[in-house]
Amino acid sequence: MDILTRTIVYLTITISGASVMIFELVAPRLFAPYFGTSTYIWTIVIGVVMTSLSLGYFLGGKLADRRPHTSTLATLYLIGAVISFIICLSKDFILHSSYLDQRNIIAGSFQVALLLLGPINLVLGMVTPVGVRLLTKSKDSSGSVSGNVYAVSTIGSIIGTFAAGFWLIPMFGISDILFGVTAALFICASLLIPSLFKKASLIIFLIFASIFYSNNNPNKIFASYYEKYFDVKLVADFQTEYSRIWIYDKIYPNGIKKRTLTDSESDLYLDKPIAFTMERNLSYYSFFNLGKVYNPNIQNALMIGGGAYTYARYLQETYPNLNLDVVEIDPKLLAVSTKYFGFVPNDNFHNYPMDGRQYLNVNQKKYDVIYLDAYRNGSSTPFQLLTKEAMSLYSNSLSDNGLLFINVISSLSGPSHDLLLSEYQTALSIFPAVKVFPVFNLDPKSTQNMVILAQKNKDFPINVVGLNNLNPAVANMGQYIHKDLILTDDHAPVEYYDLKSIL
Image: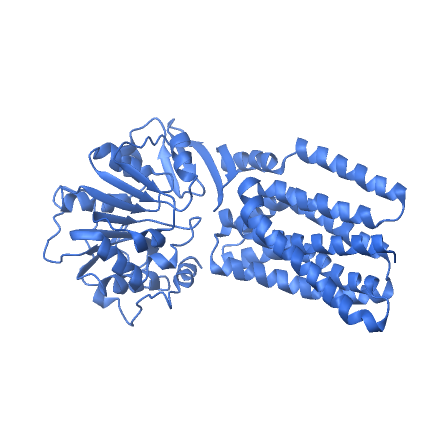
């Protein structure tokens, strides 16, 4: 093997390593709109990738001994390119069908991971041992060659990791990224094929694939399917640094139009006053309004979790003199709320695009009320916002008579009650008085929105006179508590509790 060919082999192995990491980092973003981005999703993704790679290494070693030719390596890249292209075109249909067929998100996400990540990583795993066999001149050099191959593959993985995290994902859509991987693997195959005719054929095929992709963008194809399936109009579909954003409109038979941000994380009834949305669709916000009933003179409020800023808009329009700070980790959501959800910030509004815990760590302000309503892709609240250490930070950020409202999805008893009970006890470990409000009904086993209200001053009674349609507070939580479940930064199995509530 001449120096040029050896250099090309090393280069393609580097690209292979980068492709593996790009797929691995992109995968959770594919899963997010359907299955969330919990630790369980990352575990499944990493586990399937590692299993596929290990099987690829094993099969690749067998193949290398039988067919130690550059054409073998080229064929692997070509197969990988075809698989990548198929994933690029079909990913949303696979995700959507698996989501609908599997009520268990673990089974559904595992099935999708096997389909989307298994074959491509198995093929890319086969590349490394074949490359080692091609580059090894003698037994005396086998060790150094193996080290070199794994070194350049790892360098490629490092490049793919940083490129995906800091450039590709923020700047391009997932479909475009996957098509870029497809093109890179096609180019790797063409570089290794000795025949000029075959090289030209691959390049021509890639050109036609590019034309097909540009004229049949998978996002647009899936959007058409999604609109027909759910009888909605997809308004926007794009990526941010943190998630995939879907915005769609639903028109009801009575003519009312509702706009939704990403799987019902935030809703707004269009052409209606903001109060209409609060009354019709977001019942737990009625309990958030206890803050104003409890203390009509609230001057400063903090919201952690902005979403489409619908409640921020409601507070701002209802209490225009309220100083409102919103902490939302995704910096693009404020622009989304103004463009698509009619939010126009006033002079008393301040937005902080950062993690809620990060904000609490440095905050020096005092708030009369804090609202915690932060969810990752609609699946769970980040654990670092629910621990005892976080409760201490909330308390430090509240005025003497301040209130903390926490929205969780749980039940009073049964298999999905752990999150509520642990969060109740965690809040009670810092705050002298804590109450729980079931939003929809008083069935102890009903999984629903639960609003936890923590008071910094237990001697300042809550006056709920004039607040309609509220279930009574659960006064005696002691009847449901059967063990110590205080959450800490060291141990906070929030995602496990959330998983139990939906299985």
